Image 1 (cartoon, rainbow, N blue to C red):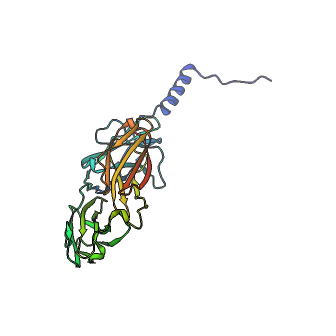
Image 2: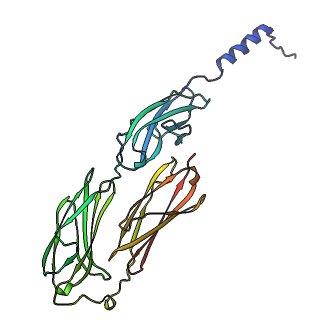
Length: 337
């Protein structure tokens, strides 16, 4: 039995194929993107979350996040979360204080790009340490027995969150005062002295603000009250063997945007930290020494660029008058496009 085939005229077949081609032609429709509001001003250094919503008639490939006029995005997200938000992390420090523009652009699976959505933000991160003034206890020599009240005042451009005062005898673990308060002025405490306490002391008063900036006042006080000679430092019954304590706080890893980044260094010792050294060991750049580190602690600012891409480890060593050493290290990844 012969099979019969339907033969279509060439013109009909051509028209059918043309209609199919037009129906399934290339996607030329651009996606749309909306930037979710970012809290401004930014007053705290660290990571700021930026998010956006994007839609397209076919599908979203990615959302790119830019800062100011940068040609390269500081982050790219290829998948939305449960709330259909595409998110990125922007690391900011006081070095970026000023006005900036965040831009987001969506790209669909056909390569079409959206019109960018933007928002201006103000960065106003506090990098000014408090100023501390100490009153009450003589800053040179105490020659009369009695009770001395240690007063203080601390001011800051934003606000002081805590003040700590420590009076310690040099070369020993003897502490006559260690008091912390949250008030910006007043009395840290009273110290009663007589000839039995003759010796050299260090009075350290530190004030910390909400941004973690630390202001310090350090005074040397000699108690020399007639009746008992000053102790011979060579006969100190208990030598200082306690190492300083070192804590390092680094920016959130990875760093994806070039700029100046602060390394926060916190130091403490049973007597007093006399010197601090440190360096960055970079996979890409080798060893980079940190200079002008404060024995009272504080921060070191490092200008980070693409040259730092890879792992970078910060090493800090603190030494006291007895030669004891305290060490700490912390690492951060740099991945700047």
